[in-house]
Image (cartoon, rainbow, N blue to C red; front, side):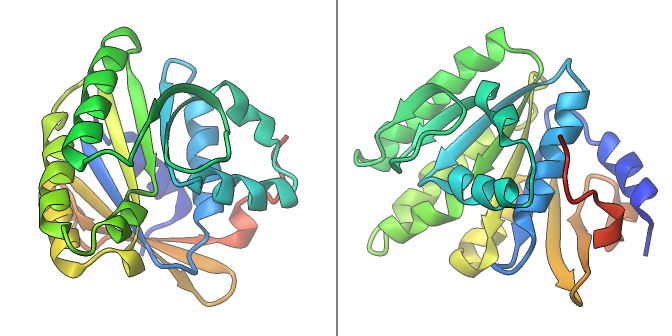
Length: 227
């Protein structure tokens, strides 16, 4: 086990060009983890933030944070790509019509972010809700998976961006999860430990010595409210 300070040091070692898969269970405190991610990036003002919001996942994260007193207005100026859903949050810079074929809207997404990364360096992409897309393609999962995997591979190594893909493990078939884990450079698994702690486990890293590391975060280490 390692402490919170070591976690901060570890996260600061992640390099641009990497892709990180954040796996979580339905009961994991994802709104809190999202909040801390945003706060950390806002402090480093040299980083640009781009959120991919699929099926209003950002709204489902934002509202619990508002209830505990976090200033969610901070999200108003953050650029957002909106894919599906009906609730607008953030500064929407692109809308993706996911009623089209996956090949069409994933190509549209790739072309947009390629141009975006070229003019917004460096960018941290936070992808929310990619797991929910799978439910649309129960009869065409294989084709959909190929397109998603292709998009993930396309920007791997692009040093103008760092990507964080959040995925609810309960919604992702094992075969799909294994493929995503193979593509990305790092995999974090987030689980609850009792009522007041959660664990961030490093399942994959470019450095073999990182594999299996666990960071235990207590609720009392995180402020309940941030202005």
